[in-house]
Length: 193
Image (cartoon, rainbow, N blue to C red; front, side, top):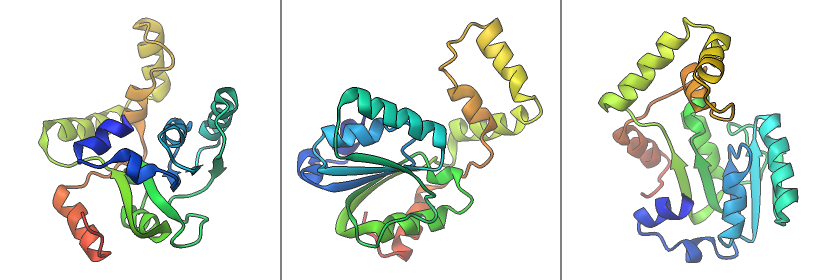
């Protein structure tokens, strides 16, 4: 998935990641952190606020035998790293779940070395998909999450590891950003597209 997303933007993945010090902000269970290491990063720091995901990341790392990947608990709004630390900054699907998207972007920029790449995936705004997603989130707050789980996983027999629906429906914070808003934000910080 990382390769296809970067290649869509005509980025030479091998050249970009080769021997780089990388960070995966909001790493969850570490799948992208480990993938970045396998794609050529010298080191990868995975950071996430959720302890359960970090425990899983450590287990997967140990099982896979991949080295030079570290995981730690931390907040994207206050990253525990010096400025100008990383050659590649990766943040997939995280900032739109914080209470201050702009602060999160400024932190990613701060830890990135000059003239390096920052990959940020944010939820878009506009269109039927995002409209429906916002409405579903509003409506599902009226139904206790335990009832939804009973319906999906017991009555409909969905696999228990398919939490994507209830995660999306019950997420406490979800910001949607237009392309122009992102461009304006990057212009504010003098970041090039």
